[in-house]
Length: 489
Ligand code: NAD
Image 1 (tube, rainbow, N blue to C red):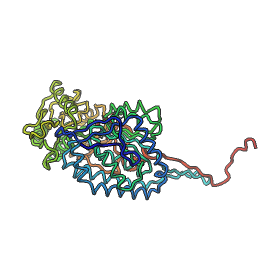
Image 2: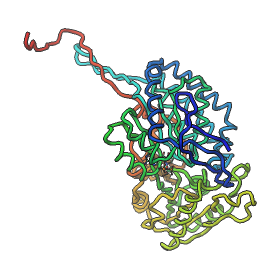
Image 3: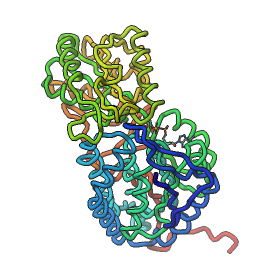
Image 4: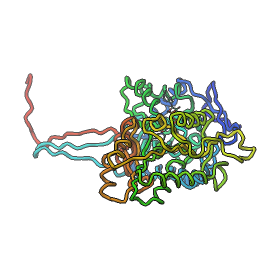
């Protein structure tokens, strides 16, 4: 079993306490990991503070070159990272190897460009003054990430943070910390100075909280559950650091009868069942126009039954295990609750049949579809974060919008419609940070990523990341001899 320490100022550092991580497909113990105390976290923050001076002054072009080197190092290790991520999370290898891990390298290449292209504004005042704006790094960025896409989400935050001149302390989720440790190693391999990126492991309530409350952490970027986000804002508020919060979702897929039904089915299935359904932007509430509801739901269910669930290392596997026994219990509990609430379990809800003995201890759940769901049910309102689709009928456009928005979350939304005017009208009316029309969830790194309502505060991505990871400064210069009172002269 591997021993994993923190990575602080380029050194591997142990803690008095440890915790273990297991392979969610097999139950095999993967690693014993150092569990940070508040003192360990303080040491990491001090390392980041010490590295900030030189890194913050490093020319943007040199930081950008370092980001490109790191992207190349990630590319050279894609296979190793993807295999480790799949062992740690149960995400199918086809999805880690071809999609989520290569995207991590893209994050560094993209923010290398952003760092060298930051612009300012000028505000001339007659011929007397000129105001101009400048962007400066904020300082130490604490990055707290969830377990569902650990490597990609860590790089999604780390790339803008360090490309723009900050130093960082990354705290990955305790359920899947292994690729964050590997990232800490690759950062050094890419020649990024020790202390610019520090990785600490541990429990949210201890290590995470120590970052949240630390007075020398200047910006905190968090991705995780809405309830955790609320705790963090309450705990960290008094330090007046900056917060970027990417939280949960319960995203609607609105299907109108005149849409390209096959493509809507493809996207709806992929949207809820990819990444094992553990996806913040999952289209978990599928609202279908009454006139095609029976046809759509029937076809959706038939296709869900055909999805291959099993060994995440098998090429053909579409769904692997859920992250932990506890999480599987929570997800399966929602399925039971849905049935008690009056929804109809059309398929799934149980352990897939015929799994090999090696996977007997894995946290597998069949792709599950609940139909006849009412929007007031808890299964339609709460984030399940697993391979569970709720399918609901709607009568007309107005009801579709009302149902789609009648939820506390507002992360993503998907609209499938043939009538272009209607598609844009509905997209405009939905409470969601990101709306996709006749499209699955595609990510362009220039666009704002984030949610409304209980799905978060702030946006990251492209120029929007500057709001999180830079301080905006105004500098005013006088050209002439404007009047200044001669007090006490
Ligand atoms: P979580 O909130 O349980 O944990 C996320 C991280 O926060 C972990 O590193 C955890 O250790 C830490 N943490 C927990 N309690 C803390 C505390 N009191 N103080 C500081 N840190 C603390 O979330 P999870 O179960 O790991 O991830 C799933 C959630 O993440 C889902 O709700 C999902 O929607 C959300 N998510 C959102 C996005 C997005 O961009 N909006 C992306 C991916 C996942």
